[in-house]
Length: 213
Picture 1 (cartoon, rainbow, N blue to C red):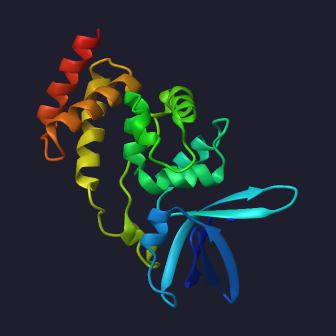
Picture 2 (picture 1 turned 90 degrees about the horizontal axis):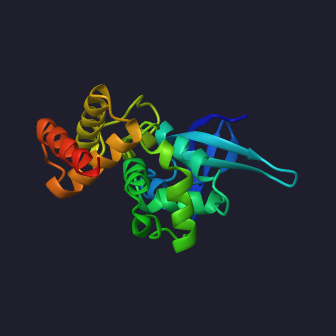
């Protein structure tokens, strides 16, 4: 199985990119968000890969970060969510936004993706609810598409993701379940804004958990 590709970007299309690795061109399907972050053809590129082997084809799906690939793998376990729909979701929502939408039951956010209607959005939110607070969260990091960088520069919103993660951990240490803690913190973050301090976020999360109790 191919787990990653590091080479030269040959070309891109509506939902794909061709990466030249040692003279061999690999066709990789990507989300619109990943494609928008691609360098110009002829420049170095690095992608994490999920390989799907079927009777009639072998498809490669490319991602900037491990957390994106993890969410892709979870999304396609939901009945009605194929690879293209999963990529569409990752194209309009960051991993943290996906987790937040699932944790809070925000079906409208999931429905922003092409191919996701109300029923499918509800199914995704229901079936993956236990994953929302378990999978690592993280923002899209366009810098890591370029080959030669281990982590890349921090993407927009990454600092807030770290604060959210710390707040969730604090609530878990206080005895709350990770999924319910994540949902409370996400709701608090939406109300307080991206610049909310850790202590404020924890307090607001506790308030929401207390109200729900």
